[in-house]
Length: 427
Image 1 (cartoon, rainbow, N blue to C red):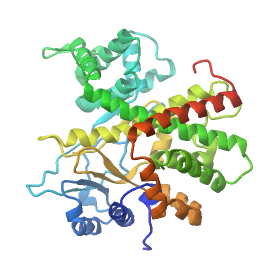
Image 2: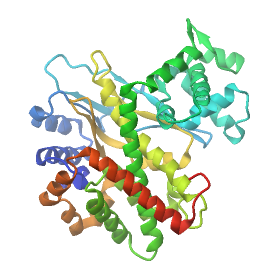
Image 3: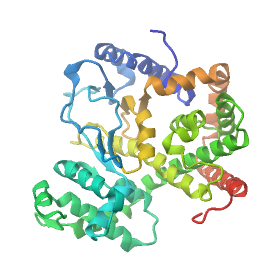
Image 4: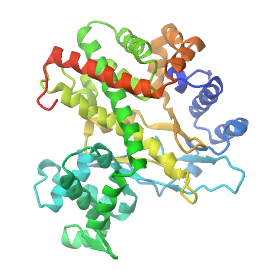
């Protein structure tokens, strides 16, 4: 198989890190456990303390106890962020290797809010059956479900009572046994001296702590990046309907390079899907030139993308604690069909948790990065020269200055969007 620069093609890394990630991107395409393990051993000294998850073809690596990807009545969806349940787990450490794994399930704000509506005996309308199915499937594993996306999205909400009530309802869901729900058709509010009120208060207390505020700051940064990329992509698309995908995509990359000095890989892949498919990609169907509330819809889309990014940052932090399960395999429950369809294309072939417990590196499938790689060709190399990478790193040495620049860029683009397409009611 021809060796190519795959995953790190449009991301800034040191030369050594780029080489390692390129090697793993190439070998992961084979899905051969032996070849991946040999490559890990080859880079052993550079991977001290790191942990890797890789999708492989060999049946003996199947993890049958992981949750299945599920469709709950066409409205709710449970999706693993890994492309397969056949997973090679590699841990690089001097002590005895610990290959325990878990399947944390992050629930989107829709599901968490539906819990509150269900507890309040309000009608969930067309989502009622899907919600019931999702609850029945999740209750046996409710202890691994999390409302973190809701907590992050509502960290600055002024309606604390509404947030408290919603978290109380989600806690009641987690306290409920499958047998109780089957018999009574409702959630428990207390069990084993734990009450839903106590759990909700604990969540609110967490939301007030410095560590959570730091995490929320990261999420807001991801949100701003997503907003900027989505708005700029929409403006380029509507201004140049007749231009080719290649031209639009390269103009977006040039904007990010020239204005912000950074090329955020995940958001760039999402933008490529927009340029390539537009409304044929369900996630982007709200981005229409005649949509009156376009700004509000892009805000919602940006939060979705920000959650995808930020939850990957939470996982390595939690897995780095002494005694923690070293291989969390992330799953997401969503009642947003468009977002799920988009994330299906973003499932990972490999995931490396860095030794510092602060970040992870993502290896996407060839089906995702190949069109981008082929599309950019010679122009891509202009953005990936050592000189271009050094320039971006130099311009981003001051994170505080970049944060201010992101805020300003988002505000400017929002103004252009509202000027071109009208101010939304919720803006």
